[in-house]
Image (cartoon, rainbow, N blue to C red; front, side, top):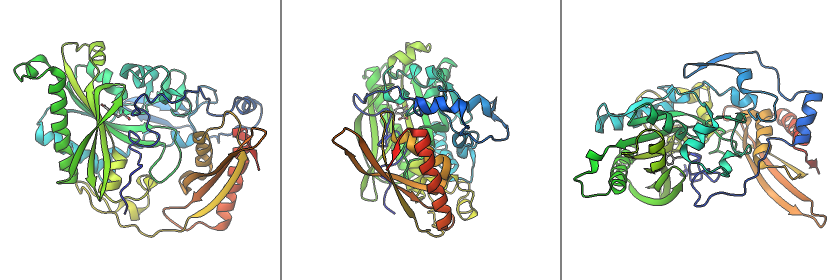
Amino acid sequence: MAVVSSAHSAIFSKASLFHHINGFKRFTFCLPFSSSAAASLSTKKKWRQPVASSVLELGGTKIAKDDVVRDDPTNNVPDTIFSKLGMQLHRRNNHPLGILKNGIYEYFDTNYPNMFDKFDDLCPIVSVKQNFDDVLVPADHVSRSYNDTYYVDSQTVLRCHTSAHQAELLRGGHTHFLVTGDVYRRDSIDSTHYPVFHQMEGVRVFTPESWEGSGLDPTSFAADDLKKSLEGLAHHLFGAVEMRWIDAYFPFTNPSYELEIYFKEKWMEVLGCGVMEQEILKSNGRSDSVAWAFGLGLERLAMVLFDIPDIRLFWSNDERFTSQFSKGQMGVKFKPFSKYPPCYKDMSFWISESFTENNLCEVIRGIAGDLVEEVTLIDNFTNKKGMTSHCYRIAYRSMERSLTDEEINDLQWNVREQVQNKLNVVLR
Ligand code: DAH
C-alpha cells in the first residue's frame, strides 16, 4: 500500500485549518446552503428525514437529537453527523483507533509513570470560545467559517480539534494531560478524509523549578523536552525510523513544529506541536509556567500502522474488518477482504456565488453515505458571460459488497436532484 500522504489527521491535510503560515485564507461567512434555499426550507418540504428521537449521553451530558440538529440558519449539522455522535471509536479496545490510543498511553505510562491524566470522554459539543477563542484562533481565521466547522448555533460547535479542551483542563489544575476524542470538520471527500475523525492532544506544564539550573530559557527548555518526548513516541509507534522537525505555524503555540518520519520511502507528517502561547497559560492561572502541547490525528497514523486503505473502514461493522483487530495488537496489517469495483458518475453545473465544495460533499454524503468514495473536480471553466461551470466525478464504491447499476443510478439521480435544489446551481 502506498503511504497515505495527503491524509486526514486533518492537522496536516490539504484542508488543514491551522498550519498555514499566515494561513488566513479568504474568509467568507458562508452559510451551509444558499439563503434562498434556506428560506424555502420553512415553506417547502424539509430535507431532513425525521429520525426517532434518541438521547445520547456524552461526557456525562444528556443530548437529544434536536439539541444538535435544527432547522435554523445558524445550524449546519446534518443527520449523518448526528448519527456519529457518541460512537467513540477511540474507546473500543479492539478497534484500530482504540488500540493506537492505548499504544500511546502505554508510551506515556512507561516513560512518565502516573504523570499524565487521561481524558477520552469529554463532550464534543463545545462553545465557540473553547474551540477558537481560548486557543487564540484569530477572529477572521478560515476555520471559524460555516463552510469548515459544524455549528450547533452561533455560539456552539462540534469541536474541530481536541485543543478545544486545553484551557478548561489547565484551569482545572491539570498540568500533564492527554485528551482523545472525536472531532468534526466539514471537508471534501476522498479515501483519507471523513467529516468525523479522532485526535489526541497532549499538554505538559513546567513550573520554574524545572528549568532553573538547566541553563536554558524556559521556552528552549520546553521545546527541548517536547522534542525528546515526541521523538520517543514516534520510535515507540514506528520503530527505528528517521525523523525531522519542520517549522510550522499554529495560533496556540510559538515556536511551532511538525514532526515527520521517513516511512515506506516517504516523509510523512506525524503530528503538530509547540511551546504553548504564554497568553493561554496566563489566562488560565499559570502565568509563572511554560508548557508544551501536541496534537495528532489517530486515523492518519492508524492507516499507516495497520495498512488500512480507506478511512471509511474505521466505521465499518463488517466482521471481516472488525475481527482482524484485537486489544493490544498494535500494527497488525489489515488484509483487504476483497476490492469491489468503483463506479464513476460525472455531473456538471453552473455554480452560484455561494457554492462551495464542502457543501456539495455534504449533500452527496447525505444521500450516498459511506458508499461515496471520492468527489473530484475534473473540469472548471468560466464562459464569456462570467458564468462558471464545474464538473465533478463521483466515485461510488462500497467497502463491503458490489453495488448494482440500479442502486447507483438511483443514488446519482437523487444527488442531481438535491444538488440542484439545495445548492442553488443549474445542472447542465
Ligand atoms: N489543533 C491542531 C489541529 O487540529 C493540532 C495541534 C497542533 C495541536 C499543535 C496542538 C499543537 O496542541 O501544539 O490542526
